[in-house]
Length: 195
Image (tube, rainbow, N blue to C red; front, side, top):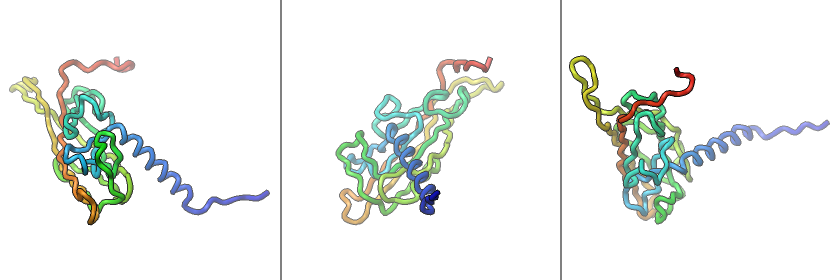
């Protein structure tokens, strides 16, 4: 009987490739370009689990609207907060910005603002960084007894900058993405088994 051994690193490479494809597939539906010049708007984008683009929850390609307890919110319903899973994707072929051709690589990617989002470790090819969980709180006013008087949307802004290598035209993609958390206007529905 002959035993064949797989080359060392094959399994790890295969798993890494599968994870990369899975991340690219999950990001594809929800890519949000950021609303900058369309010819460079595919260099760096964000993706939020549960949010598709185009949809009514993405405005002007740079505002992402999530309602407490609904799609996109992975936290508990009725907590006056939106807990989202968000990632940064680079060099995407995005149908939302058809006149953008992604470069083969980027020189740098920076993310600043309300919270930290992980960028891909390598800036070559089409990739997404690991998705991270972040929370945006709705703005709640309470009376002296702690009862809620009013609640309105909470917002968080993140700035993204991607720069291609010399000779890339345009060379830079600068975006500001606003995440909006809307408080619920109706009671949370009960889930079977919670009663």
